[in-house]
Image 1: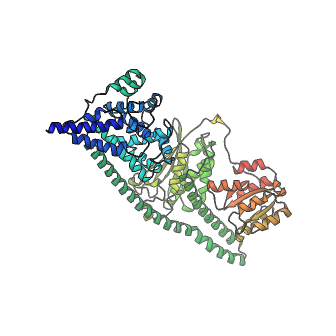
Image 2: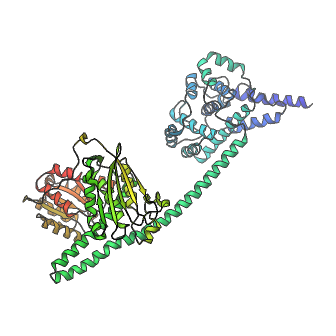
Image 3: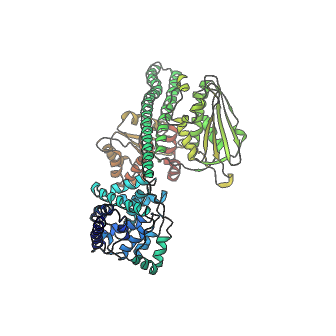
Length: 640
């Protein structure tokens, strides 16, 4: 009686299957001794596959693509048959079929992985999809979706990236339907995997006898067998591993955030300290200058001026380092590369710290002069910055009366520059961290030295941008430090050397200057400097006044601030560019903003050049020299 009941149950099920597919796949003839299993499998197939609201042809083509990865080839063969018209795709009698020419490309290419996957992820993210519609059959959009689904099926290391891409393309509800469909595909793969004796139906054998190219793609696919779904343990192990990795990542991220917060607070406190260091003597010096002027004490005035100049340079150096680190971090710094004589670079770096060396009472040994005609490809300004920062660092962390040396050697392809001191040294565990931004060792802080921890980070980044490397050698605290820089050399004959050019002071040619800045004190002091250099100057304190003044005096050059009330620098420049007199005037933005995007914005507003405050006397002298001699090409080279 039981056997008869099972037979009737199977007959009813097979009838229903045939009504939907047009054929009865052998897939549903398995487990005849347990009809309940087959019936439940059919019920799941209807819910997740046949009645799933995605378009029928889209579902079937996805089934074919993902079935590539199953070792048992029955599954892919049967669904290729549905697509080719041997049955109804997705059990839909009204569905169109796919010509063989559109089926073969689904089986032709290896699954994109690693870098090759990137374009497909971006394409999926850009799509706006729904379960009621699908991309065109055979389109790149369709293939990109199939690729992402395959990575979900295979549990690759890019599974989560693919899932994130699909989340952007589909609504949450639609994505759930897609995942339910994928779950059934996984079930079908598992079912065929544990029934390797599944035989293909006669209609499929005839199809592949005729379509040999199609048969070749199906039965010789190198992707076959890459989907191992036969054990639940694999999935569990994968899930456990992913969860462990995610927990470790969360823990590491939280630790990093806590450390970053601590370092941020330490940095802000140190920044306040470092800014006060030069500001205090500048403030005190201004008060002392009042007394010196009253007493007509010129010697005291000069001493005060020298001190304030040195402190102003320190303040400017601090701000410039911070700006440079920011530019490099955002990928906004570019180098002006050319062949340069290294001994000239080192000489300039030494000159920049000469006063500090003298005040610190250090003995300085320099043997770089023995190497002449060492040429490296680099940016002269940034190379000087590298070595002056290393020397400044050595001076700072060496007690009074210490010894600092700079040596140069050569190897096969590099020049090696070493800056060595006998100062406080750096413990071994801090050798790598010393190059991190805002990093300082406990020994530095205990020695009473502050600093922002910016200099060495900047040096390392600049050295790397010159295709070089830097390392620190310090055996133990108290034994000093040695920083070793290696830079690739180039042939001397490669091209003319980049050199610094000094221009002369005003040779008597006229130059009329207009200054525009709402900071009255800054404008007036800069105006006094222009007068002292021997040029005529007019000063106004807003954009409207500049627009009124400029046509009257027809200035040769205008230095203009950006952040002014009512009419800012950009707006003023755009209005000036509409005037006839502007053709003979050089317009320079003089601003505290120095990011690449700021420079681009002033260019778009019509400025000829962009300078970052403060402008020093030497730079101003050189600019006015070129203007007074009508040497605009020379000015362009000087400021480029």
